[in-house]
Length: 54
Image (cartoon, rainbow, N blue to C red):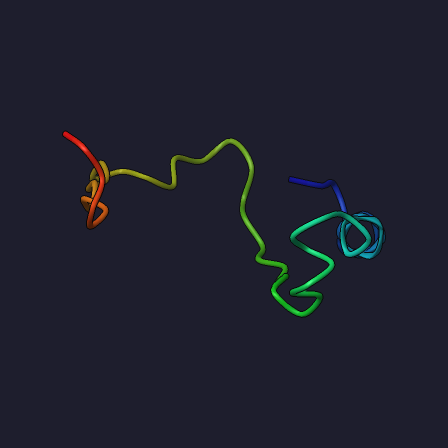
């Protein structure tokens, strides 16, 4: 999380040079969140990965 959209954009530009991200340069998006507020109020669910050992 970044304090401004400009800082998030700067970080995206740096991350695009890293392995993995280099192959997917358009995989980033910026989403806005309100600070000091719960966002996962109903918990979360785990989705098992196929082929993964238990």
